[in-house]
Length: 534
Image (tube, rainbow, N blue to C red):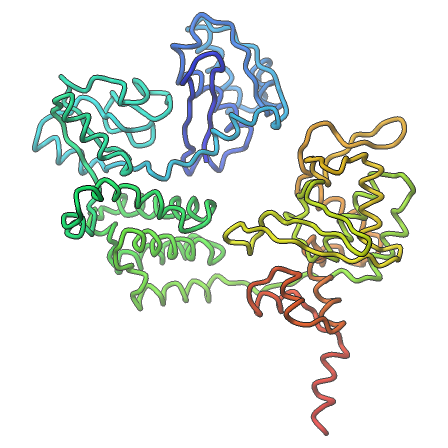
C-alpha cells in the first residue's frame, strides 16, 4: 500500500512510494497530504519554476493546502508544502476531482512490487569491510537504499534517478541488489560497461539443480519468483509479504542473524509468535505470521519451520488464549422483508426501490454485500427468471465467475419484478456498464443516479439496512448485512432444498461453511428427539 503521483506532460515523471507500518495507521487525510509533499520532493526537476495544476481525490487535502488546518500534524505538512514550493518557485493550484477521474494515480498508488528486496546493514558493512566503500546503489528505493546515491524504479524523494539501465555504470564502484527477474540483464550490462562492483543475489537452495540445467534454461530460472508470487490471491500475497517483513524486522531488532530468518529456526520463530500473542487481541496476527512464514519458505524450496511441533502448538495456544465466542447474527425472515417492503414501497421512488432491491436480491441470491457491486450488463432477464453474473467472490479462488439464477415469483416480493422497476425508473440501458447500486442525487422530481459511475460504499449500504430494519426489530445490533444471506439460506434449508443445489446457489465450497449460515427451525430440532421412540 503506497502513494503515487505523475506529471502529465513529461514521460516517466512518476513518483511512487510505500507506507511504513506506522504510516499506514495514520488518517487517510494525513497520508494523502504527505503524499502531495513527497511527490513534490520526488520530481522537483520537472516542477521547478512552473505553475502546477494539482489534482487530488481528497477534498480535505485541497482545502488544507489552500487554507491550512487546525490539526497540528496536518498544518505542519501544509507549511512544508508551502516552503518547498516557495524555495523551488512552484506556484501550485490544487483542485479536487472524483476518484473515477483520478484512476491512473489511484492505480499507481496500489502497485505492490513483490520483486523488490534489500539487504541488511549487517551485510552492507561486511561487504564494505571486504571490498571497500561503495558509491552507488543501482537498484533501490527510499525504503531499502543503503547508500546516499541510489537509483529507483520510480522517482523517490531521495533518488538520484530512475531506470538504472539508461545510465553508464563504468567508473563507479556500485552496489547491485536487483530484482531477481532481471539478474541476467544486470550481468550483461555489467559486462558491457566493464563495471567494478558488488552483485548480491539471494541464496537459491536449488543452486546445484540450476548448475545442471542446459544453458538455454538458466535465464528462465529468474521467472520463477515472479510466477510463484501468484500462487495465492493478490491480497493474500500482500498480507503475507507484510507479515514476513514484520518477522524480519523483529528478528533484526533482537540481534538474530540472517541464518535464523530465512530459513527460520523453530525456537526464535516460536518466541516471535509468543510475543505476538502477548500484543494481540485476536488470533489473526499470529495465524497470518504463521502461514506467511510457511508460504515464503515453501516458494523458496525450504523446509518450513512451521512444521515443528513446538511452533504448531504455539499457534494452537494462540487460538485458545485469544479466541472469543462467536456471536452469530440473526437471519432476516420473509415476514421482515414483507414489513420493510410495505413501509418503503412508493411508485417511482428510486431511493426506496434501491433499498428494497438490495434486500430482495441479497436474500434470494444468497449474496454477500460485496457481490451486490455488479453492473447493468451483468444482468440477464427472461420470462421465468433473471441471471446475475458474479465476476468474483470470496470463494471463487480462480476468478472464473458464476451465474446466480433467481426465479420470478409473481408476488409483491418478487426480486425480478422489483429490479426491473428499479432499472426502468433509473433509466439504465440494457448494455450499460454502470453500477446498479450507486449513489443518488435528489432532484425536484425525486431522485436520479449520479453521473459518476461508482458503486455505493459498504457504509452507505449498511446505513440503509439499519434504517430500514430498525422499526421492525427490538435490537438492531442482532442483525447485519450478512443476515440477508443467512436469512435466504435458512429459508431454503427449512423448505428442504436439495443440498447440492443449496451449495451451488450460495457458492459454498464446504459443508461446514454452508451449515454455518443456516439457523434450524424449532420444529426441525424437535423432530430429532420425536423420532427416538420414547
